[in-house]
View 1 (cartoon, rainbow, N blue to C red):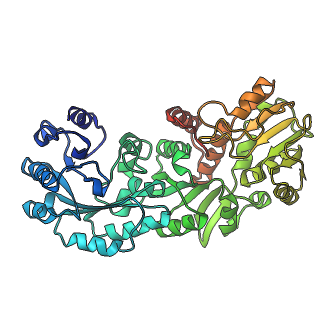
View 2: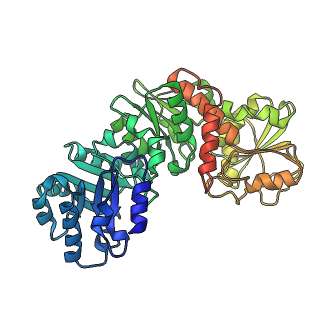
View 3: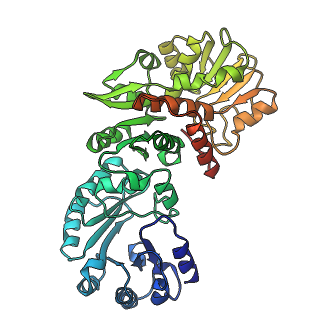
Length: 472
């Protein structure tokens, strides 16, 4: 109880604080409510609904009735609780009738919501495990009546938390990942400007299977704030590209950054694209236009921006070995080819390397690149990124060239760069490229360049806050 009260008083940035009595031994309702500075929701979740309370239902009923009698602003009771109606009858306006499904989105969700409304409670709460962005749209349909709290648990459902008002939800929940997909209140109100999002706010996002771990939201939201643009940038954890396209159309997403593995899909889905993006054969940026999406690729310029200084010599005629054959590799190949470098593509799947090389007018080579065959080595594979900092596409080398450029970034140095530096090579990680390409995305969306240093500072700050390492 002492820990609960201490956490209650330390909670900052919230309009309501949920007191989880099922998380303590010997719950003391009066003590939990005494001297509170913020309105509270009192919850005592049983094990059969995903909570930790293992006592009898009569004990739980007594605790929740005490909370109502002692003036708790809200009391949460499960829709399936046998004493639900008795609590509703005590004071319907302060009762939240809730239902949780940690496995998925139940087929009977609309009828369940209607049945919960017939209980007479002032608020209903539905929390379900969403694995697709499109599944969150079912929650928006339910919340339209204005009496519901709706939450999509998991990464795909983060949009329901960050854009709660746009979903029609009465409130949402923040915290230290107590539930799947939950994020801290300070990040919601700071980085994502939760309270500033309204009907006119334009929504952008990063389309990625690992969207929550991206530094892009920190950069773009900082730039929007600094420029006074009414827009928000959120993680869009799509299960596949069609999942994003359907959600974006229904939700009116204005633009998106697109990451591995969706860059080829993004170009294929676009109604228009510039000549360079067509040459690359992949898009990393989308903007809503009449008739669908316009596409561009800011990776080319973003890749080149820090390279000349780091390489320390002309790129013309330099031998460049590109590791990987995905959408990022295509942008790198086109950038180096147009600078006059002699480019060779290397991938574990020789056929894939040959196809990309043929499409971009360069050569393909064996895996791994032979010793002494390159001046510049560029890693476009996922190895070394996100939580894979100790994985390398070339464990142990050999490293005999001038510069190793690893497009991954994260907490600490990747294994590839550590070993290359130890072998005497210059090294460059992917953070400068990430910032440079993001600055160009922002300009393409808004018609103005972000102020110098704003995005870089936001990326570095968010990177320091990360424990696991992040990937674009």
